[in-house]
Image (cartoon, rainbow, N blue to C red; front, top):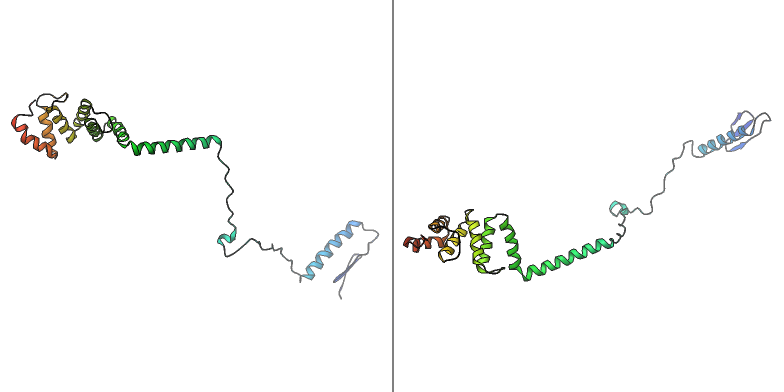
Length: 211
């Protein structure tokens, strides 16, 4: 064996012996002990310091997506009472509206169309006039019918112009001036309304549209 001498301490491979010199304190002995312990550890591992390797995760499974590390979501907390009250009210309104739309579709359609008519859409104005004329979804009212036909015809709607003229010729209350009905029927005929062609040929040619 090789013997190394450091001060009064004697180190032999695999064995450590310490003799305290009377002039050295206890700290010197502790330092030597620490150095000896480190040297022994390196000697036992072949002179190479070993790195600490963490143990494999027992939950890891390579056959699962992401190694089985996808965790389930926590259970959602229940909504507060006022939120559930609002949701319940919205559900009741939805069910009520669906019931109303199914059993009173004509009435619902009239109100929706009436809203668009007030926004100035000529097609909606003509539809409102038709519903007032036939009493579909609303109480029959010829005067209101002619008013809505008038609004649509002022925007160039051909069918509204024809209906307004024919209503005037049948004696319904309108604000048409003499000869204006003929112009409206002619306008409707020029836009492809077939009934307008018949009225022009059978009525207006005989002077029936001059009122």
